[in-house]
Structures are given as C-alpha cells and as structure tokens.
Image (cartoon, rainbow, N blue to C red; front, side, top):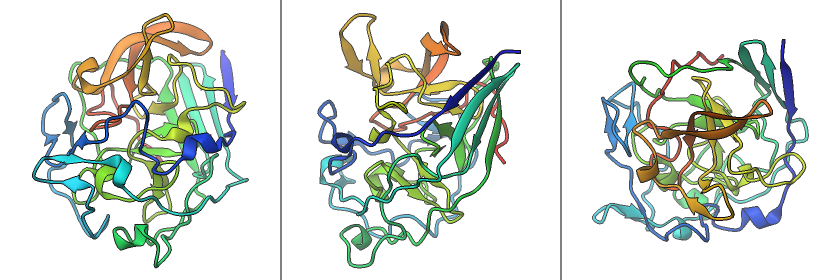
Length: 297
C-alpha cells in the first residue's frame, strides 16, 4: 500500500494579503459579472447547477458601487474587505493516499489568518454584507478516488462544499444563495473567505493564501492546491509553458467543466491527467464535475 501524508500549516506572508484581496498585478480592473451564467447543461464559462431555484435569505444585502449591472462587469479593486486578522492555531489537515483512496481529514479551521466574523457593525464591509456567522470547528472527512475517472457525461454542481483546499478550507461554487456571482456581491476577508451559517469557512474563488506551502515556498504551477469531490485536483490560476514563461489562465484555456488535461505533480510523480484550474473570472473554480462526486460528511 502506498501511503503519502501531507501535513500542512500556512506560513503567513503579509505580501499576499494586501487590500483588496481580489486585486492582482495580472488581473484586469474589471471582470465579467457571472449573474445568470447558470446552465442545465455543460457550457464553458457557466456553472452546470444541480438546482435552478435558490433559497435566498442570505448574502450581501446591498449591491456595491463596484458592480455595474448595465455593463455586466465588476471591479475587484474597488471592493471593501472584512477587517481583522484572526489566527487559528488549532487548525489541522492531513491528505493521505491509502491504496486506491485519497483521504482528507480536517477540522474546518483554516491554516491561515481570517477576517473577524461576524462582520463588525460600523465597518465598511457591514454596509454591504452583515454576515452574522462565526467560524466553527467541525469534523471533515473526505474519501476520494486516488485515480479518478472521467465519466461519460459531466455531473452538476450542488450548493455547499464541492472541494477542499490544502489550507483546510472548503471550496464552494461560484454563486451565493440568491444565485448571484458570490465573489462580486459578497464581502470576503484578506484570504477571500467567509463562513456560512453552519460555521464552514470557505472560498468561492482563488485565495491569495493558497499561493504558498507549509514551508512558505510558492506552490509550483503544476502542483495541486486542493481536491474536488470527484477526486480530480485543482491547481492555481497560473500556467507554465514548460520554461520560464507563465500565463494567467482564462476560460478560453479550459473546457466546459473548467479543466483540462496536462502535467500535474501528484503522489511524487508528474502525471498527465485531467485537472481543474482556478481562474480570476467566473466561474472561478469549476463549471461541472468531470467525474463522479463523492459525498462529503
């Protein structure tokens, strides 16, 4: 039995957490707004959602000035951020290959700092998003296929957890409970995360806090930064051409599920496999599952 264990602790680097969290030297000031980009079938740049109606009753209560619905764009650089830098010294995550399975065990606490939740009354973030939820410790156990297969047809994406990052943080899909573009409307913290009502801190899009490993070394462009519930890895938004040149990945580089086949460093080896990619543009994480998603506890 091959057993590979990864124990991860985030080495905090203030340079990764400049305000606002979404801003990037390689990112344009305005991004396409994802409202309405939900589909019943696989479609590039859309999310194939398991439901067409949304419960509402949460998310940001006010539309920010950085959102231009007429133009269908939003400006990440103009968006406020949840204040604070709270550490979680008890955060724990292990990712272990056990035979044909990859097992993720975590306690739902991020290995990097977060903002202060609930969002503080009187803050700039509170003017738009009054998230009343707290980050709470919970048991996370995921048993994923170590050698995931691509199914004949893509599978839809549900609400809630769709993957798990190596920072100990759940990955959610691109929309909020109202079906809107979550990263555009909701206010996140310095790591682009926030908690939902059950206390699960999560990302809807790329987090700058996923840029480095436990030793503070930047992840290579061919290394996973997390695993989706179908067992396929997800990598960061920068792709190498095999030499020194890199590029910021866009939807045009990916298929309808927001992935591609390429070289990925998995279990100590370079393998040419299907994998997903974070992007700066909607749908940010995945558009559909290329494999069969496993149930999360």
